[in-house]
Length: 140
Image (cartoon, rainbow, N blue to C red; front, side, top):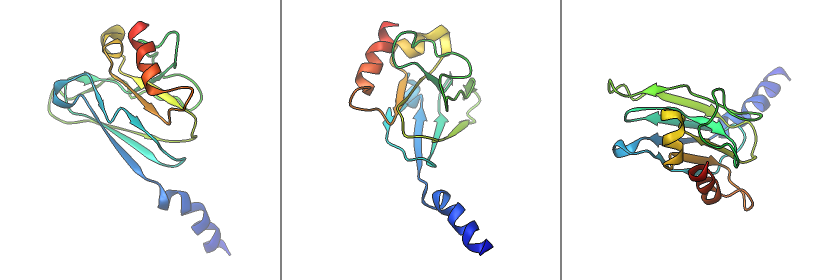
């Protein structure tokens, strides 16, 4: 009986996917891909490949940029600044805890990276699209 319970508890981890996101490809202010669809239990691995960036959840609208330290909302996240200036390609792993839309950006340069389009979305919806979030970031 105990072994069955352990197996059932591990099922989400067994079937969880990892979504790889490259941060700062080609020395740009980018997250690649900038949108992913993830299930509960999936992980998102952000790998910084240039400069110094953060992976921080933020608001969909209003005060989007800069994202606040600690991130926004339930299940928010904040990697803090991750530097690849030494070529170490640091990683930040976020485990998806719900399927609601989560929006994020880099908080570097007091939000300048965010306003320049260094943004991403996890599970955007028909009413909270990545395109609208990116426009909100540019205008904030």
